[in-house]
Length: 305
Ligand SMILES: C[C@@]1(CC(=O)O)C2=NC(=C\c3[nH]c(c(CCC(=O)O)c3CC(=O)O)Cc3[nH]c(c(CC(=O)O)c3CCC(=O)O)/C=C3\N/C(=C\2)[C@@H](CCC(=O)O)[C@]3(C)CC(=O)O)/[C@H]1CCC(=O)O
Ligand SMILES: NC(=O)c1ccc[n+]([C@@H]2O[C@H](COP(=O)([O-])OP(=O)(O)OC[C@H]3O[C@@H](n4cnc5c(N)ncnc54)[C@H](O)[C@@H]3O)[C@@H](O)[C@H]2O)c1
Image 1 (cartoon, rainbow, N blue to C red):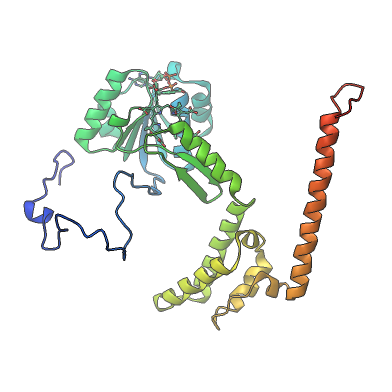
Image 2: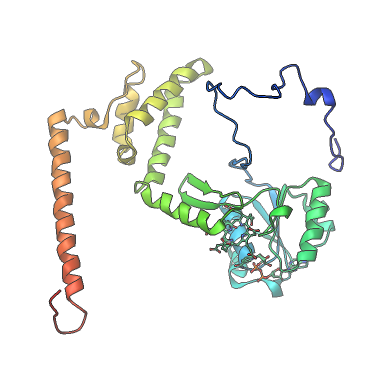
């Protein structure tokens, strides 16, 4: 199919014998309900694929960073004179193909981008680029202009391989930023590192349990590890723990961190209790410190709080 043609689905494809009844049975709770009005959140693998960014201001700088973080082949269309310091820094330090000019339609033919992102201060030029991309069926995002976006950006938390994107679907971008920071604040420390470890464990498991016929068993065992170990424990999974865990795979066993470390239930409880007492002591000390800091006003004198 040519890029320019818009496919028209046939009527038979639209309505099959299994089409839903005009009045759906809302009492059917066996399957998750459809909640229309959202976006399709996917982790787009844009690595080494050409992407065009138009504009060189602060918004473009953010887009460029997101793309570089995703290993995209970034093309930037903007005169150097219009580029902000961060964009100039990126041009100097990252493998960006710079088209030192304003946007021109021939760039689309030349670059064949998989997506186009514009962040320019000309609404007319933005609309023109949007229409052109639409004709060529290239997904496009015009910064802060929802009707000219085939996809929105979201507020993203990144910790190593972990990415969490928050979208309010255009209702409140600032709120997306606040929700994202709130979520990030609740996550265990070193979670990214724990995920790296889980990735390594999966790779090592594939080596000892090769072949498709092992697939179901492998997946079940991996799921059990992730369920049995808390996130905090996964953060503590080092080479030794990984080796010990994998030894249990053949007999379908998932050892706990406690078992691997040869600690009994009592040891574990008393260690946890000790940790609790230590953290209570720490809290007490912090309280004292706070009282001290509040009482000491920074000058060479005291006041009674
Ligand atoms: C998440 C984030 C990602 C990113 O862009 O990188 C993002 N906007 C961010 C920040 C932000 N944007 C704005 C403010 C000012 C405060 C406020 O209005 O809340 C702040 C806050 C700030 O700057 O701190 C203004 C604004 N934004 C849009 C409009 C137009 C409109 O709504 O009609 C206007 C009004 C312009 C005007 O009034 O003139 C539209 C869009 N902005 C989106 C994404 C998409 C929807 C995402 C969602 O709903 O979740 C969407 C639809 C299209 C798109 O651009 O993709 C990023 C946070 C990054 C981070 O986490 O730090
Ligand atoms: N910066 C923000 O905080 C912010 C906030 C809300 C909305 N926005 C939206 O994002 C747009 C971009 O904002 P910004 O602050 O990043 O940029 P900006 O307004 O500082 O600069 C615009 C950039 O676009 C370039 N440009 C203009 N026409 C061009 C063309 N035809 N081809 C290529 N490059 C072109 C300019 O050279 C310049 O680099 C704004 O116009 C606005 O719609 C930005």
